[in-house]
Amino acid sequence: MSAITVLLADDHLVVRSGLKALLGTQPDIDVVAEAASGEEALAKVEEHSPAVVVMDLAMGAGMDGIEAIRRIRECNRRQAVLVFTTYDSDADIVRAVDAGAMGYLLKDAAPEEIFAAIRGAVQGRSVMSAPVASRLFQQLRNPGEVLTPREAELLSLLTEGLSNRELGQRLFISEATVKTHLAHIYAKLGVETRAAAIATAIRREGMR
Amino acid sequence: MSAITVLLADDHLVVRSGLKALLGTQPDIDVVAEAASGEEALAKVEEHSPAVVVMDLAMGAGMDGIEAIRRIRECNRRQAVLVFTTYDSDADIVRAVDAGAMGYLLKDAAPEEIFAAIRGAVQGRSVMSAPVASRLFQQLRNPGEVLTPREAELLSLLTEGLSNRELGQRLFISEATVKTHLAHIYAKLGVETRAAAIATAIRREGMR
DNA sequence: TCGTCCCTCAGCCTTTTGGCTGATCCTGCT
DNA sequence: AGCAGGATCAGCCAAAAGGCTGAGGGACGA
Image (tube, rainbow over all chains, first blue to last red; front, side):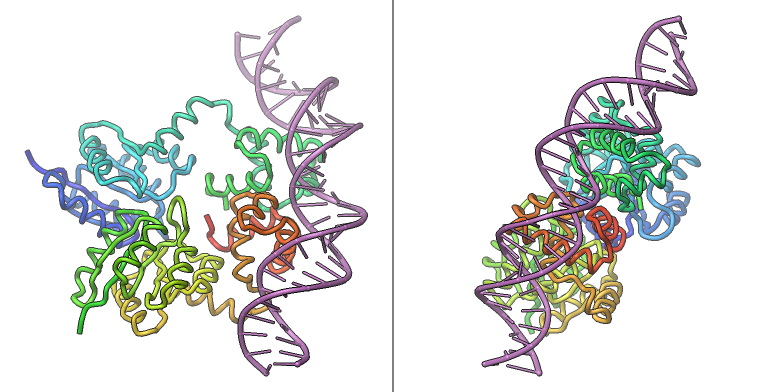
């Protein structure tokens, strides 16, 4: 049987180099190309048509990983895309899966986990790191914890550092209403203070 | 002349592996040990006494990179510590330099830059990535608005959503002292509330 | 040695925030 | 029509945060 061809897409040379070294130990896995940006990844996919694309989500300037996944999936269904990134942010996971990612690995994953994910991907199996899987299940179990549009609006302004009074003025509602919304937001985010809510929001939604 | 001995400290196996592969191409640089945590780094420094320690700041659980740098510098002045991390946050830079780091590299640095930093470090020269250097210079131009190391530490924890009490417990200081630091931080950042401080910090520093 | 800066802490007071309960209005769905 | 859920508001209370003043100890350089 022939080796599994792999494209590495990560803007950090060190990470690509490390992955290549790790994957090089496996006779059935072949790194055939590398890319340092989303654009480059698309071009390399065209050129080499690898079986698996291992992709970082955060790729410096230009197209981000999610968009790259979407484009790859759009024009060619043969590639299985594995996300390989540092953070297990809820929003990223959902967006990546939605864009068509076959698996989601964290950068501190064990080598065996990475190998298994690549082999699984070509067979159509979906593999993800334990923390990622648990977050996904948690989201599926609690569909009720989605912010309403108004709450999301509030949260967005909250991340700008506004006080309750300012929030009320900005949204033309009373401070009491602001507090009600905030209480709901805190409950849904699983936090108790506005500081934690801001931290959570910015980190997990990429709000900025 | 004998090769420069290097210890790699990073919680991501992939990154260690990549660095090792890169540094392996240089005959005058020898990776003699690796560590996946701050604690392990300290032990390996004792054991191998490397000339240079290349250290990530974010190391999952346990001791963080800054603390590890401080400990290494405390008990042994022979090691030059190079920070090798993903983000160029002002607070981290200040804290790392304060803790005794010889250089500050970003993970997307070119290989030559990394080699040069390691070679410079053993000669007592300080090397840092261009974005890092520019941030430092900017800070030097505005001396009044630079956070002290302690303030930067507090701000960093603040962005995790901790309360004053939690901040005090985490830093082993009283709540009163926390409030004093916060007041100074607010003044320097030009904000009036902790919410705004968090928002400013995360947006301006790329903290996460 | 003196001044300066950083880190530490205290007390007092006001404002803000958060928890709780309960209520009205509207919209969309059954 | 009835029901659910979202958005709006009030009042009350406790906890947290913020503004202010003052103060001691340690490090470091002039």
